[in-house]
Image (cartoon, rainbow, N blue to C red; front, side, top):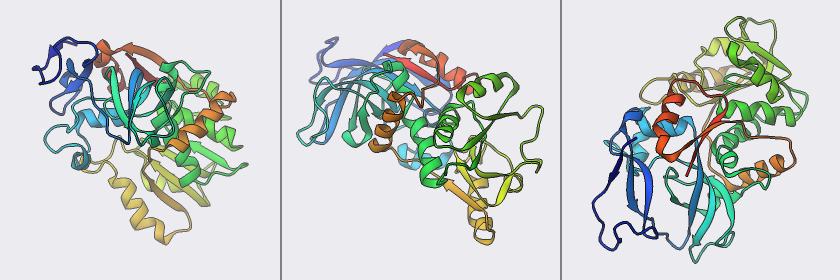
Length: 342
């Protein structure tokens, strides 16, 4: 990744470490070739914001969507022709440097993790309701890969899926970022968990705690021989009729993500299932969109510190090698999550 310097900004001392920072930015949408390392002014905060010195940032599929600008509907919130915030990244783990006058939950020096737009940088700004105290038994790199994926898995299971102890749960995409947490959380909540993955990741999903693992290269999880109370369809593309065939008569499918969906919304299949089919059958087909909530990160902290959930950190890359990390994500070569260390 090449390093480029942006024009001097009035009020920022050129090269001064206390007024500028390194950041991975993009001037347009595209694949990893649009990323570059730049020197930017250190961000200022408002009264209700927190400035975090970033030690590590997590890499997830949502970050890839922000980089490519696809599905196109997401550009309505993040910039039509180019990213409104040129600094990539959302997951964050670091140390609080400064808090606004209205912030009550944190103070300078606190070790935190959560979500901060523009976390692929030395500093990032966020709101206190998107942060929690970092689990004491995790490194910053481990903590950085928890918030978005772990929070999504938690909400999909509890808020949308209403998982109960004793239920049978199927997790497709079980070796990915969200899937790796979903397997652990569903097991922790007392469900009988089946994970679906490719041949090379069967051992990994087994180590996550799945009671059963289906290698989709050699077996069909929707052949009707077994039915599930709850299916988390994570970043998949199976037709709705296949999902329903694998459900119990009153079971629930929760659609999480849409990596293989249409280019406009990314969720055409899911929306058709939820709007056109679900109202007329006893099974539930739920389109799920995760929220960024501090209370979820606090709950995850408790589970992590109790040893019931662990982040699946595949590997870490320094900020200068963000392009390599993004390329690995695009190629599907990650087990669990990857962190960017700053």
